[in-house]
Amino acid sequence: MPSGQPPGNVTHGNEGIQQLLAAEKRAAEKVAEARKRKVRRLKQANEEAQLEINAYRIAREQAYERFEKAHAGNKEDVSAQIDKDIEEYIRTVDKMVQENKEKVTAELVELVFNITPAVHPNFYVLKAFNQI
Image (tube, rainbow, N blue to C red; front, side, top):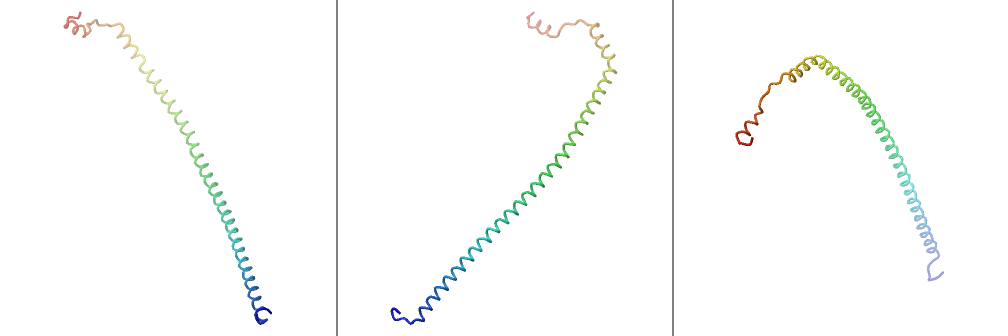
């Protein structure tokens, strides 16, 4: 035995080293287990987030389809109403033409055949300035 140490101390020193090595091994195992738990939690969180994203996407697509159906039907209704209004307006105009056709024709004939000759008012203005 070197340096005068009793044989019991050597065994006690080896036990201390063994305890330290065992403690280090347990600590490494705990760290490894903590890392595994962290990876599992991240994977689980990622999966949950993906599920939420998919659910949100489906909900938005359904809302869009409902909106599209609601407004597509309105387009057809509006188009039909416009066509109906145009047809009614054309019928009204045709009726007015038929009612007033003879009256307008008579007024045009009156204006064309019964001319009253008159001097244009500008003639007197130009004559006053001696330009005629």
